[in-house]
Amino acid sequence: MMKYMLGLLSSVAIGAMSGCGDGAKDVSGSGNGHTGDAGAGEGGSTASGTGGSSRADAGGGGAAPDLCAPGSNDKVCGACVKGSCCDQAKACAGDTPCACTVNCLAKGEDPEKCATDCKNDPLDDATTAFGSCVTDSCGMQCGG
Image 1 (tube, helix red, strand yellow):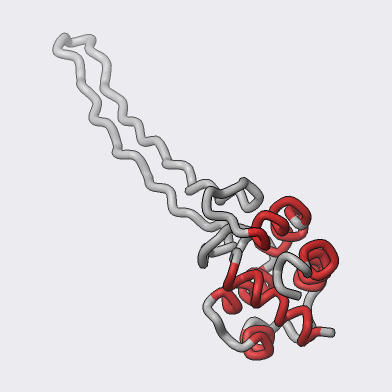
Image 2 (cartoon, rainbow, N blue to C red):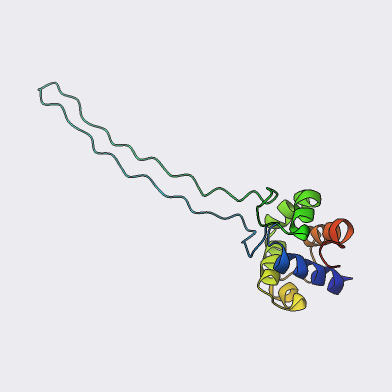
C-alpha cells in the first residue's frame, strides 16, 4: 500500500502539482519579507526645539501560495486534487516530512528513496491522509 500511495503521489507531484498546482512549486509555503529602511529625524532649530525620531517598519513575510486556487495551467489531476484534497494538501504543506516527500517526488526521485530521505517511513499521518485523498478522490484523473 505504501509503495502504491507513494507512486500515485509521485504522479501527482510530477504531473500536476507539488502543493496542488502545476509545475514543481515548493509546498513549504515559505517566503521572504524585508525590513524597511530607518527614517532620519530632524531636530528643532530653536532653543526649545524637539528632537527628531526615527522609524523602521518591518516588512511582512512573503505570503504562502494559495494551494487550492485554480490555476490557468491546471491539468485534470491538479484540478481534482485542488477541488477534492485541499485540506489534506494544506496539512501536508505544514508537515515537514510530508512536504519534503512531495517536493522530492516532484523532482522525479524514487518514491521509496524520498520517504527514507525525508524520514517519512513509515508514512506519517499527513502524508497518509493526503495520499489516501488523492487515491480515493482523484486516482482516475491522476493515473492511479
